[in-house]
Image (cartoon, one colour):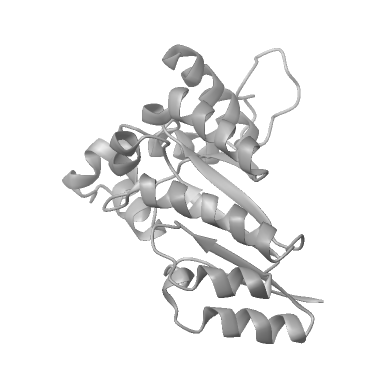
Amino acid sequence: MGNVGYNWGEPGLHPNLSLFVRTLRRRDISVGLSSNLNVFPDIKNVIREAPHYLRVSVSGYYNDVYRQTHRGGNVYAVKSNLYRLRELLDRYSNVDTVIQVGFHVYRSNFPRDFLRMRELCDELGFLFDPVLASFMPAEKTVALVNGHGDPEDRELLEKLVVPVERWMELFAGADGPTPIVSSDSTERPSTTTAALLYAAQCMMQTR
């Protein structure tokens, strides 16, 4: 079985999305979608065609928090569509589509929004998949590292649990002789592990 993933560019806006899913499924090709779920006009037909998974990106449970990091979005629309997804999955007896809620963790949405969204996912039977928010797109990160960051991004950058500069330090030291976490350790943890440990320390300070 082949695999096709459709993300970025908001696939839910494409008028022929359900046709794409149907065509790929008939050819025994695994179909994965990603959406912020603010606007998804053909959601009923897409779910009826049963893509293998749909990942929903969110960054808050309450709208005042969500709008800080999903500019122009409305979390009420997102939550309404999450309930709509549950209703459609049940209506079409769709047990093939896995709904995964990717919660982007920022300093501003932990722990209150984090816990409430996890509760909602438990209620709906969806997978809750928290990830540390990163600065995107990559072009902006490159510009920032090279000293050409956009001043308008400063507020967002301050919300990152692991700052861009810290990520660069971790990557820069990934092959060096000095362990990141403990001077007693003879093994260097992976860069991702080190970032998660750093993030855990930050989150403990947030609580």
